[in-house]
Image (tube, rainbow, N blue to C red; front, top):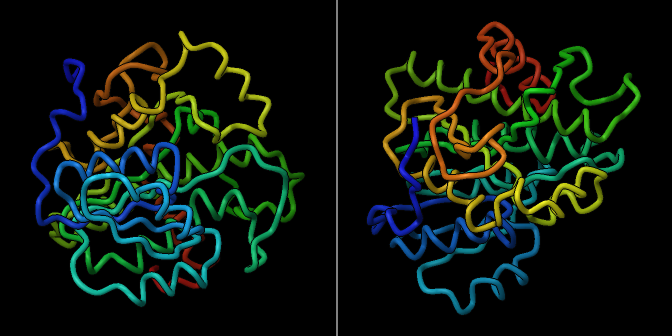
Length: 288
């Protein structure tokens, strides 16, 4: 379904609403936070570098609340969730890395998998009682090349490959949304779990990756402002549970936000359920 070149000028009035955006100190996250605040929302930036985030929003209109949050550090995730009081209308799991060298977090987990999927999984499940509207998960068209190994989610026995780990983490995000929506629906919750892909947006995300070469071909890519539109659309428009919002151009690489479909592997409910259980075991979330 096309959205007739929807733009941020069409955001609804968000006065009185609280939105949490992770990794919002720069790039798509900062643009998303800026536009939501401009529309009247109180925007909570969950970031690793709070001073940098304060400088980034210092001259922007709107209400910003900056809090420390490193989604690759499960202690930080738990501290953020434990300190939260009140409602969260919208959570946007934006923080992410791409095709980075093998590294372990303070918890001994794979850094890329934890940043893109495991940490956001824990954050979302811990904050679940606070949600009133929706959770937006940022994925990538590259999830369609991803493969999940339930016996080695954390890249302990396989030879690490940065791009394969990225693809797998983004497929895990898609499956997480599917299972989260199933659980929400089963309990009669009005909260929605939705997915957003910015397409190929020219940001620093892939700076250390061989895939960064695509940023030189502007005809294939969205600029960051346009890349953020899929996220803003998924966060504010009346889309169904587990909707997948991405650019309407060829391959989902660029264009205006539209309702699309994830890859077939992201629509497997049995795998989604098994992945949830395996992830909960990995992080000790107690959410089986």
